[in-house]
Image 1 (tube, helix red, strand yellow):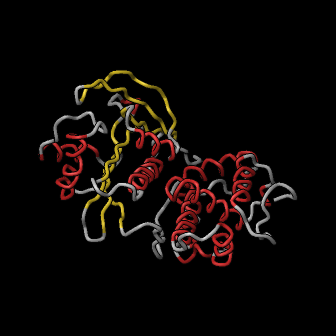
Image 2: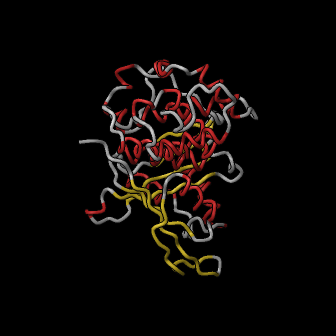
Image 3: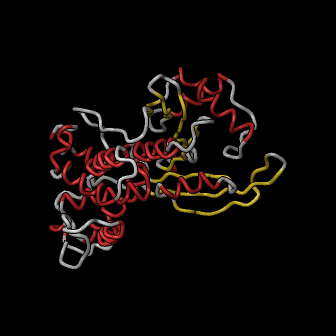
Length: 319
């Protein structure tokens, strides 16, 4: 970074929260040349967004900032989704393992541990990391899994064997919540047909504990059946009762966003009951914008309900 433009990468004084915020602002404003955007600054930028938005929300914020920076200072290779997501995972794991450590201690430890970008080669072969797929959207490591800063929960595609758990989770929302406007739980036959109808372009996913229990699920569904809407999808995310406040909703939604990008969709639409503040906040944290409000369109629990429309535009790989 040019003199006076923000935080030096290896400061001779303790790094403060304000220094990381200044770095983030300088990136968003493209206030320094591309050649000055060092590896260390990339790592510190990831630390800022992980602390500010959590591991899942950090990706949306870093993606937006780096794309804005690259628009002003085009690099030879453009924005690289996999590298950004991988560094967020490494930074988040480092921060989670150090509890209440201060910003300076976290930053200094990160730069000691990951001072070289070659750290990613423990997880990715060079061919996979430099592939066109890895530039366009996140691809999984081919050598060793990236660390998880959270718990032993992973996300995978749903199978027919998961359908009873999916309906068990969904039943509570049908019976007690405005998260869905459904008032009856699908029959087993209806749920099987629902899964089959989704197909590869509209995945259904589950969050699974290492012991095998399904603790949440998500899906991308057709937004409108008419042909011209084929690249617009709608998201759904549900977390098992008793498993909230663990970041599962963020992880499920972030995973759906990544899958939508890989599948080539143009936008994700969310329809959220106007009284569901947590769901609205979750979507905003992951880059969704308010697109309108439909008043008194749902009736459940003896009251009329608004629906807030939200939309997340998706990046497109270069042709």
